[in-house]
Length: 296
Image (cartoon, rainbow, N blue to C red; front, side, top):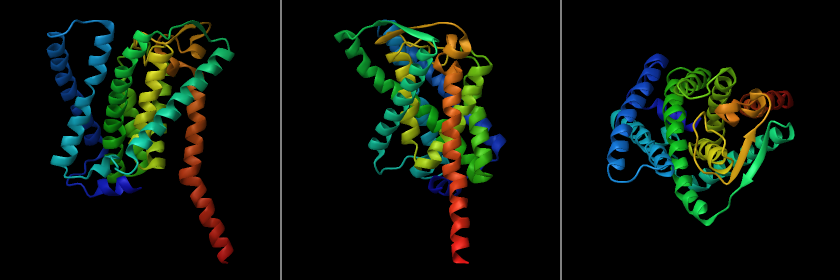
């Protein structure tokens, strides 16, 4: 695990409790800066639904900056230690976008087939398309920021100090806690968030960089809120190309939390987690046993 080994060489290595606390402090500091940023921007430009979404999502850049400054200046750790690899960074980010969008569309199609949601309108106006371009950029900022904090910093910090399993658990719990105040939070959304935290850590281990999971995270949120008009983790995302209506039981439709509150999303993630776990941990052991048997 290249980036975990890189992180092990950092100046400071905190136990899981202090790492969790420090990650929370990063979030508190970022929240304060984000409030100042919000006030400064809207003292100059009108406050509309679109501009509010742009400002709120773009403000996540401060989370990334805090983590990067701490990692590079205080810990003296490398860029690679938090997943910022140079080789094929852009392609990996786009790969994540493609996978995230594809899986989100798959979940929506399954929900439609089960009668949980229906399409009620389609809008491909030129104005909406122009507004969508900067929305893609700020969703990318937001998705990357949460991954840099939860996976790039916290997951690698705990894993390098203790072990990968504890790193996955702590980073998943932290990611879930970040969303406790969201609208529509309930048992299924909490389970979905926890599973996403596990999936994200495993995908980072698989790809050995932060880019793929950052692109996945950004694309999932963008397609969910700005393409299909679902709530994104309980938050309305504004105008979208495809208007959808939830029907029937919330455990299938996701209700006011969005696709992440649906059993469809949970089962989809479980399948991917099982595959990644097999590929990362079990497959290698099986291959090693077979090589030893052949050697005998």
